[in-house]
Length: 293
Image 1: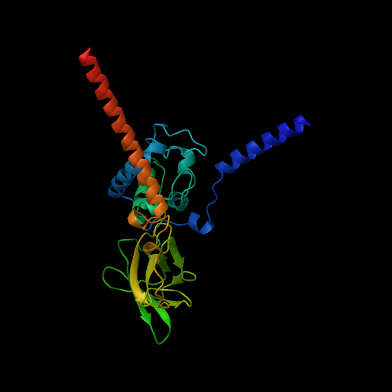
Image 2: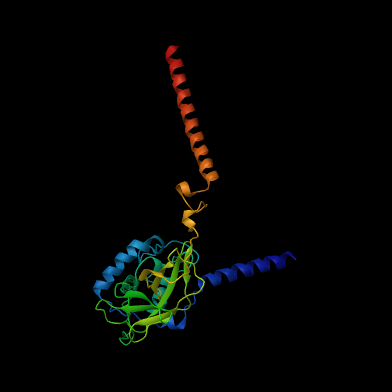
């Protein structure tokens, strides 16, 4: 019986370790190529991003001084690391996996490609795949959104344009309603048409403020699409119900916190200060008593 238990434990340990080493990348992400030409300038920029965000775990490339974790961060200069496609590296850096964070929430899409450019500088045999100029490339600094309501069509319209005010075709835009504890998605992502327009249904049974206003957030939907635009529009049901920040609750601070919490906090603080004052006064009495003797 004990042998069976030991066998099961060993099997589970091996299975866990193997699963920790596997990191599946979707096929379309694996085949993705950089929209930027890798140059000495992109390598320099990528090195700066890497030094700021990655050395604490990966160490310095070629030094093998990465942190010993499971799964292993690895050295970007190694053959195993370099065997991955640019798309796979981009996907993994952007989406992360414990204990590695999602860098799509930390750096821009351009910065991620700069880092990959820096990685490839350690591979003398690397040849950058041809850039597909037929695909629309949009980074957080090259897009802007305009959010309006088409009252007659009962639609919310988001228009995506570049820095030259030209429409951006075929990019995915996700639309959200801002809520206190997170953003509420409005259906599925929409692709912009040839005019750079994406349309969304106006939601029903959504509560707003007294004027029916809610804050809408349009976000560029990609692994590292950190560009977003917010706009306050009257598309919700007007309500006079106090907002969560106007009521006494555990998540509020200051005088909006529950009375019992304020009293408890005040008592604890006063007790600590009273105890400190008592100690100081006792030390003063002992010093005085020592001088008298």
